[in-house]
Picture 1 (tube, helix red, strand yellow):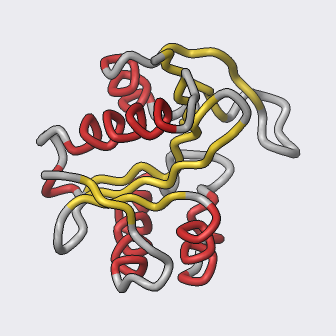
Picture 2 (tube, rainbow, N blue to C red; picture 1 turned 60 degrees about the vertical axis):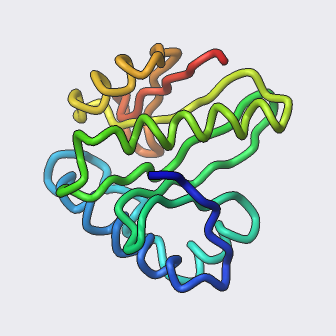
Length: 153
């Protein structure tokens, strides 16, 4: 399956929001603080599609990601793959697409963050060539709550 960029006016913005909410729901009770996904709305995701890049795979949508250009790197956010589509290489495909986009933008690394508690995500990202580059605490926390991973390309 190939990925394609989702425009702000595309009906799949709603599908992407529902996919992110459904996929990230499994983190409830596992991560602290709660996911920023709870603050996402149709309008905020539509704005992300306008000011960042929203990409998806499938009709209906089975995987999506938000890419944000930052100095020297491309940030990968809200990577979501539907439960029934997991294990089929869709996360790998979206990471591959992100690598291609980074190169097109003249960037030489990818970056993402995942919560400390989500050890299965750490393993997946490590298998995809990412290395841990830092840990940080969300506001109001005195312990690391998030791990930053980067991949040189």
